[in-house]
Length: 261
Image 1 (tube, rainbow, N blue to C red):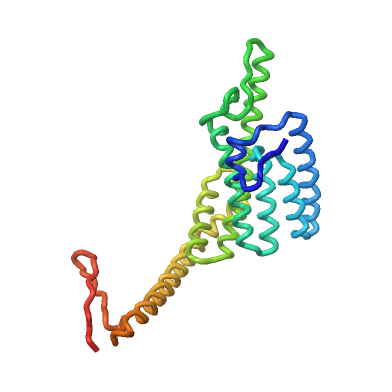
Image 2 (image 1 turned 30 degrees about the horizontal axis):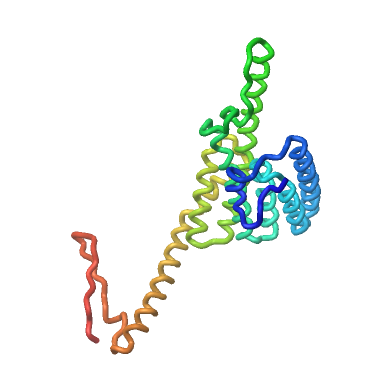
């Protein structure tokens, strides 16, 4: 059974086009994917990050595309490899893909719009009465709690990796995005103490860096606009120096004055 065709969006395919594999076939594909992930983990542990990315990519190819949690784990691991290689843009893309996959789990995890025949946590509802049914229901709830914990754990890792990559890449937009990610991390009650320290330090260090980057980019933009304006005005013997913006303190608006020099 084919998971998707060339050019299809994986998330769209998983939700509306791709039919789920039979349990035996799905288990075989997942086993193959996990074996490739294990090989990738060994490459990562031995600092062979490019080789690790190659194996993680193979694991992604083997993994059924509707298994969003497994895909999120692989994407997050790839982001970790790109961080080690200091490929900040690729790290951001991989971490974002991991977070997108986890977001596709949110409706099932939060009880919104569960699939037909499934509980709010994505597990099949247990019907029946008696101690056996009650025991199965308790087991289902325990699995549900564990899945939510696992999702939060991978989400925290992906956010940490994306935030760091954005901080390293720099620029007003990236630094602002890093701050947003760190703020999201600060809201997680399960964040490890070491990560909490990193988040707290980042939230203290980022604001002045964001302001500095903003001012620089605004200055660069104004410089380019001035250069463009001078090119337009030059045939008329004018330049942008002939025009001054004057702020009206009463209204906060600006007016333009022309000065003949």
